[in-house]
Length: 81
Image (cartoon, rainbow, N blue to C red; front, side, top):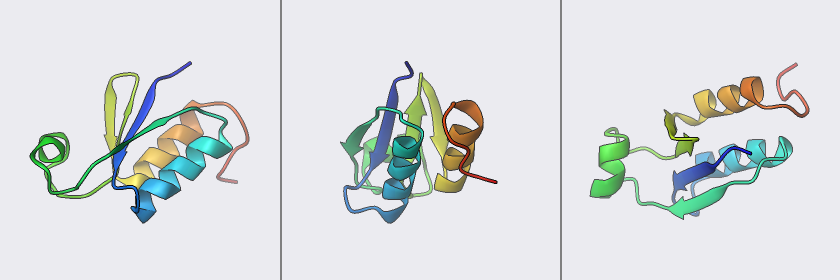
């Protein structure tokens, strides 16, 4: 099973979109509440945006790209026709 961590504010709309895609795929994940302007997050993603997602040590950014990666990489129902 993959280890998946979402770095986003708890109220982040885009973070929730990624979380819903992971739920639809039946994957477990962990949310690390993160302010987009924090120094820690700036080292992860310098454009002051969330979410960033780490999957098995690989960092992914931009919610659209994250969702497509998850849909293409993991089994379960296809989310794009």
